[in-house]
Length: 349
Length: 202
Image 1 (cartoon, rainbow over the protein chains, first blue to last red):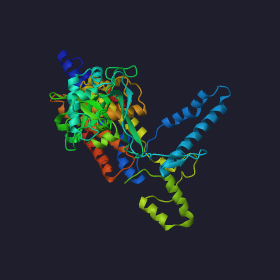
Image 2: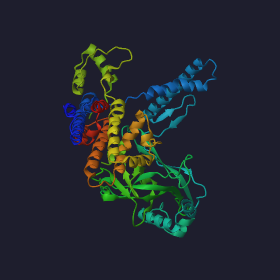
Image 3: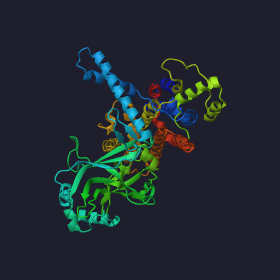
Image 4: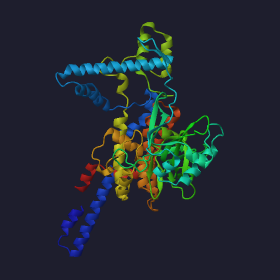
């Protein structure tokens, strides 16, 4: 309509023509905005489908995962691995027999595993020997791996980590004072502590029960390579959750603190008769901001560097719960990603 | 408790039910809320009738919901000029067991695979929170509701992964969905189809 009007008055004054052209332009952009606004919606099938998830679970049980990965992996197991192990000459038969053998071995292992669960003792065929077995559901302990060279005393460990010996000694004494006084306890004398043999490690393996399957364990491998490179990349010092206090502390974190793992180490108390080995870890602990509560605006918990007071701390490796994931956000602050796995999601909410 | 249903077990029990007409088995199925009988798919080769109607997480959530969500999030970041901050946060994500660290910046990834989307689902909410930090007063409400909307979608997907459910977890899932519908309006402007845009520019 506006276009018609523009044609009718094309012989009008310049100002008139300009005014009309402006009017046409405004009307067109209004029309476009209106169309875009009318056509915007969230009504598409995948959005609607979500409304059926809960009722679906009620009727048919939990929702399973489908993936094409299984088929593709099977192709590798059944054909590619077999071909690689063959002599490439009339390979079909060799591939078949290879897969057969692998399959039979797998079945045999499964049989042994299920027998272990039932009895706890199995008789090894032919030899007549009895093997006593540990029930597979007992929780495995934490393991230190990757021994660092030249860290046989606390002084050497401090040099390797580039930290002050006095700070280390102060922290370790503080840790000792918190432990129970028995014959396993480390000596609280700095001179004696300095003589004890030490081994520094670069990896702490932390097994934790799987949330979904009670008889399986997830193993977290917290790496602390210090300044050295990890697998041809940069250095890697992982974040970990450390139990620092009771459930009432730290708000929604319930007594857990985020820490940067510096060095797990073993120290042997050769001065006492028990000669107990202690697994300890040096960590740099972060302070939760806002009392460890969820930030209303971002919906996440934030942690930050300690501004004053000691941030280095010695903890027993038993207090290291699992790895943590934090994402840098601003100057010396991090956001705790509690949605990284189901276990963390289930604990922090 | 809503656990994963074992259709093989049901089948075995139903087969025993036919000749003997045991009332106990009928009672068992009554309690489960399952009917005994065959449908049209029974007996077809390589077809498991128990799995046909199930929604799958790969296509519905990772390649469906999350992929759509990322389009809106991209539009939102572009509008508020936080694209670079998001890319920076994306590259800083540290490793975690079962999570492969993204090697490329977010905008460099051309094609998304199922497991990449799963990875994304685990870190998108925190990454976005990092990219949208320090809003000015005019952005505060927008950022807050965008983060809320993304977070509840991720929460929903995480809870959908539970192998067994209780009435409580199901009510959580429903409440996440309701919150999403309450807050989704923030992303409405990024839901314009390409067809509409061409039509509007005609």
